[in-house]
Amino acid sequence: MVCRIHLPAVVRRCRGQLAAGAVGLILMVTGCAKGPVVSPETSRSGEPRLVQTAKATRQAVTRTVVAIGELVAREDATLSVKVSGRLHRIEVDLGDSVALGQLLAQVEPRDYELELRQAEAFLAQARARLGLPLHGQQDDVDPAETSTVQQARARLVEAQLNRERFGKLAEQGILAQSELEAAEAAYEVAANVHRNALEEANNRLAQLLQRKVEVEIAQKRLVDSSVLAPFAGTVLERRASVGEYLPVGTPILTLVATDPLRLRLEVSEREAGAVRAGQPVRILTDGQPTDYTGAIRRVSPSIDSTTRMLKVEADVPNDGSLRPGAFVQAQITVAQAENTITVPSRALVTFAGIEKVFVIEAGKAVERNVTTGRRHADWVELVHGLGDGELVILNPGNLQTGQSVRIESAPAAADPST
Image 1 (spheres, helix red, strand yellow):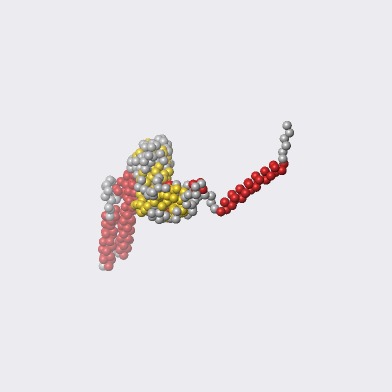
Image 2: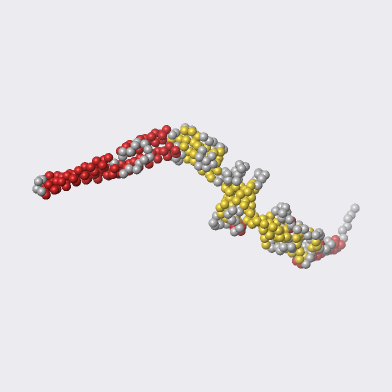
């Protein structure tokens, strides 16, 4: 069997197909140049797109600022020994709760007890030299009334009287000049002895004060041999064992205070102006079924030049379920019951960081850029960009500005109370 092909007919058929393809491509390019592609809802029927709408309403909404932060201990202290010695005992361990002033550990106290007894003996000796009882709190002493000073004063008075008497006798020619000079010298000696006695009494009084301070130092060193809890908290770490010789400053325990906890937050520069001390805070944590509340207590006076964030701190009561080191999300209430405009969340469109809604003007969809505030599962607050009572299109999808629309159902207002 022989097949014959008519070449002119095949060429004409191919040319026709190529021409039809070229015309189609030209029409496609021309259509793209004229305007946007019409959505399937209008291209087939030529009718406006059916849409659902809701009315933007002004409602009383609590305004909040959302920030990310970290829970830290209110107090975090590493306790060290203030005196050297062998660790005699340690009363707590990891996770133990302690009260303010509770005994946590103690260095061997025997050496410091002996130092105290020695200091007390030196104090008693100093009191005795001033004519005071060996023990007691009475130490008001007049140096001029001590026995050595009184003895020296008596000798001075005697020498003064002798000098005056010998002077009168010398004037009458009864006493030799040498005897008068001897009386004058005895008076000078007595005066110097009296001055030395006063100086010695003052020196003994100063020694008494020194011995008293030494006793206080010895008492303090004995007290410092015991490590007491500076605040109520929980033992985070134990770092020493009984029997170790500990030089001064050796850490033995780490103690943290966890009630209340300190919440450290960073607020963006955009929201920083609304944050004040005393504002309530609601805290959301991973793995916890309930929320926690606190209050802003400390606000940094300036914004960090590197991160452009404002640092704030809040105190959060802790029932034991919160732990330091946890990251949390916080909502700071910056305004109570503020009248703001809200729309359903389904009306908001976000693209490339730009937030917008679609409204209806003269039967056509019009894109409107907005600034949002607080968000809820069912509604969102609009700070700028939309007026009270305006209709917004729900679920706009691929709706474009200028596209004809027709409302499918009656408007439904957003309900921020849910």
